[in-house]
Length: 414
Image 1 (cartoon, rainbow, N blue to C red):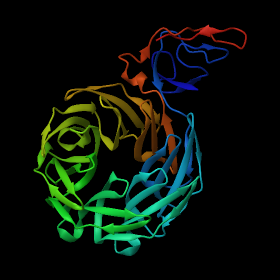
Image 2 (image 1 turned 120 degrees about the vertical axis):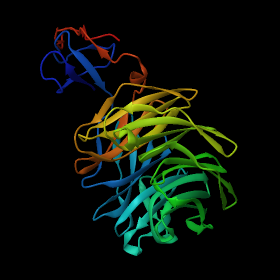
Image 3 (image 1 turned 60 degrees about the vertical axis):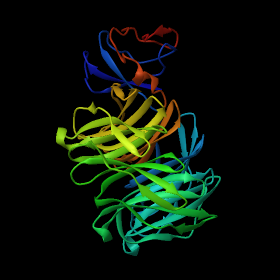
Image 4 (image 1 turned 90 degrees about the horizontal axis):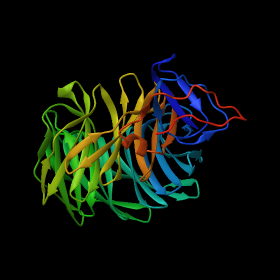
């Protein structure tokens, strides 16, 4: 089912009409849409509710082409995990497993292999300590491993990335050490986790941390240092970490940072630019050795932009999902040429009430977005980003003829 939104002309501006068909298909039946009405495509599969209650701190990982693990705070604010099974654009949920029976936040999950995920989080039932464990998958069942404390003091803004199937780097803000940006390597053996030595990569306040793996020995970490948006390259040798120099990519308040790898020397960083009316902004960061060069900033949303989540489709296309001030969930495709960015048109995936947003790539034309929809944890597949890449997605002059079960009519052509 394809939805179209009446955004101008005709009647009922802003309301939804549902057409039982797809672009260039003939309809056996369908809705009567007035001629000379502009329409805007809303591209997405059906919504799948995976938790019928408040759902926050969502982190999702792809296990294989048809299975996703979602970790989240729900169920009395406990840490929960669940397997979602994908069939086309339909989503079926498994049974939720509690991995931490106390208030759990700053959840960051990473895939180790198709049946093992490491989840890192702040355990408020245990001194706000930084904690990790391995979750093991069998079918749609999840078994929680033993909790390992990797930081025995309160931490914030956790961002974990896989280095290889037995090593994960976890970055965080260390409240026990002046809120410095800190990282360590966690080593996995079976379901046991061994902590590495801590490295302060930034000796100053670090907020809104987003780390991305470039290769098995290099991670870029982007953060806000209470003055600027900054990026650094962290180099790994065994479990030791060496921090590179700091590069400012935004000289002002920078929030909701989401960094995504394009290739081994290029990262796109998306963020809310507080010095520019909290607009959604993106740029390409280029790596040479341990140095980082910031590209030109490009505004992708001229309005207050929150809960940003970016995901790579391929080396020249990134889908960025975000929430507007009115609570609408929006996605766009950003096209990269060198360090230049072209912004695609907005596509709405959820109306008012969107919160706690994350996204992940299923393949180059399918993205799953997970979010709180008013009071329910919800997942949806955005399945045709090519519409967003096209230069035109508003078509005028639709036929006024209503298709019936006996009369086929072409509703529009692209």
